[in-house]
Image (cartoon, rainbow, N blue to C red; front, side, top):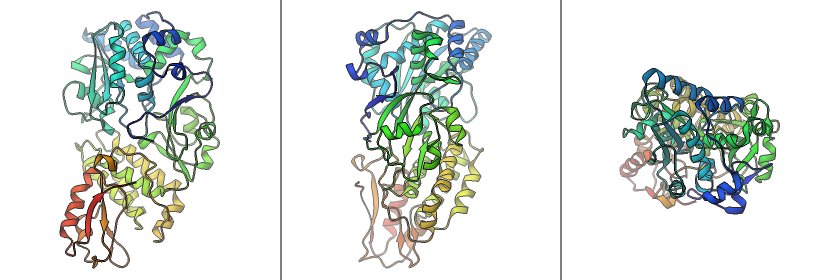
Length: 489
């Protein structure tokens, strides 16, 4: 899946959020009104009641009840005698996720409708829409804003396209002109958010679902999906899928239907819930249905709707090592578990991929960071790595035996750094290398020595945060055998 192109969009059943995409491509205001029609304004009580009746929960990953967020903001406004701010989180900084960008680029007015509903109901001071600075969706959103009047002043704020920039606290800090990292302590945006005002912050798809529900009403909205979690879900299907896509489907849809439609070679496992999610076996996937409840029954999480089958043609342990390195580099660097613990975890996972017998080291490194971070990043990264070791146990054993799985790392788990963006990798001139071992002493997080004393390292692009260590290893090689080259795939 291209790093800068939104994948195709499709649906199972009657589309709601994606209605009109096939006919119009992108819906301008006239097309949007033709497809979706109008809606009536809601009072604050009606807004809470609608969200309650449709069981609307955040679609950014945490799944927090939207009605509870609204109630908290209303209570805070009354207590402090302050107006609220509405924030739409459309940053989508996680590399495998494309659902929000699909709405931004093709149906931006649904996002604006949902934000307008909330702003009018709560008499908001301002609407702020946070998007990534990757350029995807910004022009579409700006054009949509120019076509209509919003009930409150509305502005677009861009944030760095990083994994942690979309965390709620990090987004509020960024809007306030501070560093785009999560706050070091828990701060409720409903009490103290943008400009110190009570802030209703939710995901772009969440506001779009609200806009759909306001038109349909709770009874018709709930006619689709399962009773406990009615409506549709937006999914991003990638990985080994031969037809990767953003898919809208009713809750309760079998996961296998989605994978079959996208032509997925499942292989030994599927990552669900994104890079803070969990791996599940191919066998477990056969019984899972698309819902929070369905994924929880398999010990997994739906998260922000990322479905990534690993397939049978790539090295799963090598893929996991690359992503763990990336997640370590995405740390906010403000607490010990992130700044020190995640690089240790990445190093331990990389050693497993290189044939080391470091399973216990991985578990120990994960245990050190779990539950101790200033945000959820250490816990999510540990969950990702540990579940991979369980699901890919056969591959772990093959690597530990020194034979490896015999498969290249194809990069099916997407990362934001690529060869065309200047990514580099290490290369070795075997005719020069004498096995001095200095490189492994300088950069142990990248290089280890094999049984014969020669350097072994991943043949994959280096994450930017490891490039300095790689350069040091190159510089200390007395035989000039090691070098940094352009990464190619």
